[in-house]
Length: 560
Image (cartoon, rainbow, N blue to C red; front, top):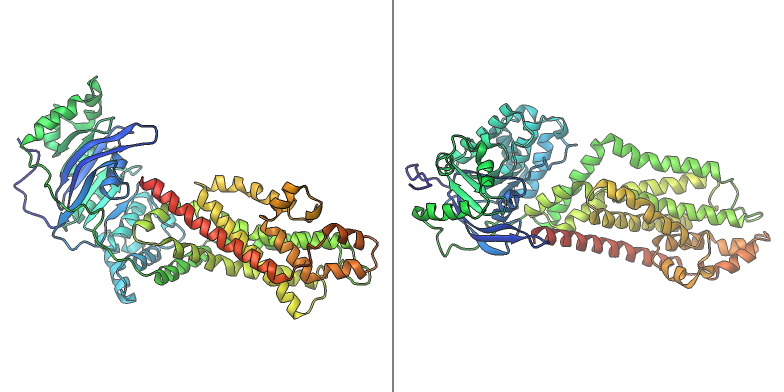
């Protein structure tokens, strides 16, 4: 008996040949052990096994997302293949946007360069119709039902007409009726020539597939063939008991050895197939990616009213606290208040830092799965990061301008001319930009929003203590002085102080506190303001470069 149905008509699509796949995790445990199998074009194949058996690992290895320790994966077929479609278990898709807008942005990132707006619109409409989502096109993704969100996640990958679809637990958490409907959709795709490979815990899904791949708890291949042949091989009426049957054997090598003998009659995987992790696909250019990602980020922010209210409302709250905390006239040349001017300048600098940090701190960690998925579709990291900056920096520019303008209007800033006010604004904006880049770096380094939130006080306290406002830098211990060089807020504080003319104000203002205070600060406010700008600009580039490196590192570790 063979494990393949050879009477079915040939199908176009992408076939997959896996030979000797093995993979070991960091503790030395092997989660895939010498897996060899063939998936024919246009088949629907289910991968099943107990939790921890390596189903997702095998799926991602077949998809080229993870590299095997040993073995190869090769593709062949006659279909015109765009890219591989990979649909993770979670609904990895922005929930703020309407479904049609989500697919439009995805199409602009995935379809070949030169695809015009009319072609994008037509392809989005086709995919919506194929997945029976046309009537839900204007509904935000977050308001779709579970089955509809799953189909929406599939729709993102279907835009490029992939030759092979990989889906991780597509029916997990769905009602039985919705799960059956989703499998019918996948069957329709297969009949159109798309090879479909999925993992599942729902054994009832298996009978709707052409073939089933069974893994033991040790990540070995226990069976690969039709569901009918699987029941006969394991001696079961229903595959619902297959995990129990596998666990009945104390020697876990029994079933893999039996299957090795069983499939001797099956044609072996073809030798010499080209080792190609993915079919050739040319992504859109960096500039195009940047413009699309920028437009999408801006729309996400605009549609999330709570986030927008927080982004713009928190500076208003800070302004109110400034008005309540500091009396007007601290910078009056005839009766200045040196200690108050220090605090005003410091809290302005810290305000710009805090706004930038909080704007960036949740930007990447909350969408790491989406970024990973889009990286597989060809999205590059530099356009991705610059798109974040392109949306958030104008908001910061507006907030910083309002902060300085209102403080000047209520007499909490010196009566400077237009050039000096512009210099104050440039210093504050550069400080916010450096903090934004630091927030993006930390957001890329953590795994979720909770970790990012916990980092906020850890990042803020040093920017308070080692800036030189509470304790002047020359009065610090040597270690503190060296650490102060790494505080971007120090350079903003000193730049603001230089432009505000605190040296002249403290020396010539007639206050007895001025000269002693100036002496403790040494030459902190003597440097030309452009030096502070240069340092702050260096922080921006340093933190953005480090963010890129962290994301590259995360990607390589995920694939390893």
